[in-house]
Length: 208
Image (cartoon, rainbow, N blue to C red; front, side, top):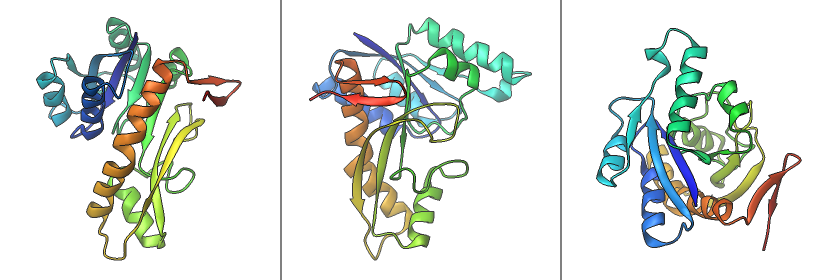
């Protein structure tokens, strides 16, 4: 049984997709061990409560140093007996010490087709604003393993989404969530939990 801890910052729609996926059997062999938010008022914590999952507020701003926060985050992940860390709308840079501790055991969902519209400064609506400003006809979402860089880890899967002429950033964001994010993140978790997805030598291996 794969024990996952989900890190969030906001409303938690991808967290809800995970909760629903486990309940429906889309995600198998997986237990949601806990939820950690760096925002005290994140609605994701309420989603965790409603699902009977422990939710924790843990923010760098509450600690005197980045090192102290890193240690606290690692302790909480260990308390949850975490096998896989899932960044689901987590607008926080994960400390290098945590990335090293959970090497190849952290994944992230990003609302674009990496390498487009990714890296520092590209998050939330900003991604969709940039896509519309550039005039792309296709966008989407990417699930990838997390390394020390910003959205630079090995890609697990991607799903394309059509951009429409009348789109606003908000409308496009919703379509990307519904048609891509909420589908490929549960699929990636299920693949890792059941040994179909693994990483070796910095490359993602996907079994049929």
